[in-house]
Image 1 (tube, rainbow, N blue to C red):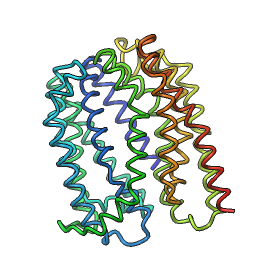
Image 2 (image 1 turned 60 degrees about the vertical axis):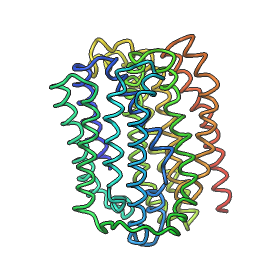
Image 3 (image 1 turned 90 degrees about the vertical axis):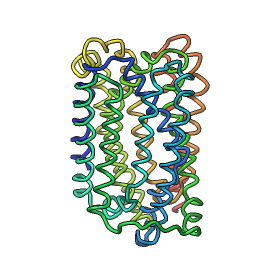
Length: 395
């Protein structure tokens, strides 16, 4: 998983470095608007089925068919909403040229809806070497198509075409190499079982979306797409190297924690090892970003993006704290305490929501970065409280 994250992040940085020289901040902002709306709709309609399938100790066959039908319906619904609302969304962000990109983005959830839900098998059964091959193939196609289309068109749609190509490859591979293959069969009682447990995942996902993107929405609305493009790129540079470390740990520890969830002492020891490991890796990353911000931005993006330097410095702190907070989520999911993640992200939104608008008005994108940092500072003590509470219950 570490090799996968390392390889995909190298490809992501290469893609960003190339596209940042082919496209301008306004075009990145236009794509950012489409990505924001897509992510919101995916979160609002999230069923939590992937987490459910990993949590369940029964075989995937029991829920796979129903999960696939639900996924197809969900993807089609998101695509329809994007198509119908594209002009209104573009008008809201005062960026008319975004309507075409949003409409094209509708293809992404429609295609992804046909992914075989059994794709979680590699993670569920700790087959991370096979997960490496699968994900690396998808990321490679996404990055290659985005760069080729960017070279040919110099358009914001290049990044959307990369996502479409990656989605097509993921659908094909999920049906060709992963079993069981789903059938179009629907069992109502199984849907209820998934939704009853997944409601907290949906709520947590929605709050997490607001936690991560409320600042983007305010910047895009109050300022302009150009500023949104700069801010989002600063966010990527500052958070990706740090949060990717946490994501690797999360991917691995969640299924492991599920397997040892009946042994409280062992689970506690494993959890603290994972947190210490994350801290040992992300804190040095944070210092590198803080002290070498300008050369990093200049090398990766080019001189036209140096306006992002002050924001990257602020967000380097955010990335470290977010990584430490997120490393606790696999623990909560493993013991079916999804509601804890909901409460944590809700507190983060409270801190972000109270400060984002006045800080953006006063300090622009730097204010947005400060507001995001305040949000994670609200969430951190809540995370510590729930971890302590959970381990006291084990006693």
